[in-house]
Every structure is written in C-alpha cells, then in structure tokens.
Image (cartoon, rainbow, N blue to C red):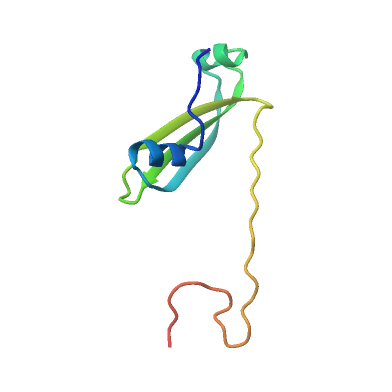
Length: 103
C-alpha cells in the first residue's frame, strides 16, 4: 500500500497546487472485469465483476489536464442521482424553457 497524504477533491487540488481551474467533468461508468493489478490492492479476485469509471476533467479552455480511471469491486459502489424538474412557468412565461425566446 502507499501513503496518500493529499487531501481534497481533484478540483481543489488542481486549482490549489497548479492554478488549473476546472469547469467540467465527464464521467463514463461501465461494467468490466477487475484488472489483476487493482484486484491485488483491493483484495478481490482478478476478473471478478467491477465498475470501471473513467473521468475526464476539463478546464475553461476545453483542455483535459486530468484523467482518472478507477475500478470498484462488486458491492462496493453506489451511484445515486437526484433530478429536479422545473415547474411550469406562470401565465405569459415560456413554459419553463430556458434559452432564447422569439417574439
């Protein structure tokens, strides 16, 4: 094992240490077999079911200064999403839509 002494989110670490201001995160979640190198560290069987999460961090210029790849063993990951629907606009509004309006 290794000592991980850096604390904070990827966003805060990159900004604090390198002056990189991140604007966007793209995340891909897929099913995969656990790679042998990760399996040893996580104490699971190589090839066992896992979630593979690839994250691309974008800065204000659309450049990708950071990419991370993580594997999560079966039963050790929960993904929760909360979505809020906009309410209908009041009379004379645009029906809750955003963006340009035509007149």
